[in-house]
Image (cartoon, rainbow, N blue to C red; front, top):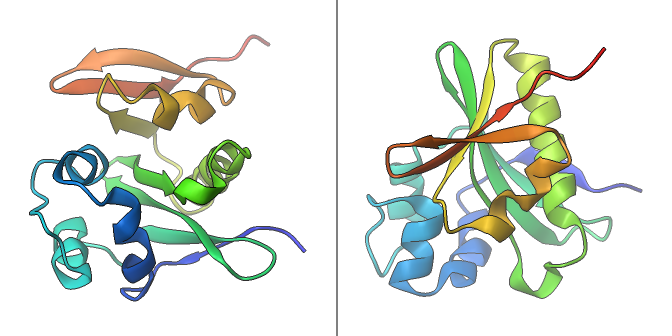
Length: 151
């Protein structure tokens, strides 16, 4: 059995919110609109999540281990708010989550693909280096855009 990416549910945020248990961590993960302390309902509203763009990653045992979004911002899809359970970090799950989100975006939205984050979030964006994303400075952070691959 493999890790599975499933449409996120409001209930998943009950498990995810303790992973960002401080105001600073919540801001880094969710952005400046996140209020602290956060409730699942408030975060869901800020995320504007839907089954088409918010996803939870489950391990083979069925445990929730990650979350991320593939949000459509015509014509592009922005990967955002990726997070892995603190107890499971360092096991390559960020790469698994990133790969599954990229596949989801490519399959359902053939436009461009981008990842945005704060420039001080090196561990959060590290999985994208192996997918050949290149960093480009943008307002309030950095965008990681796919690089052209040599033929």
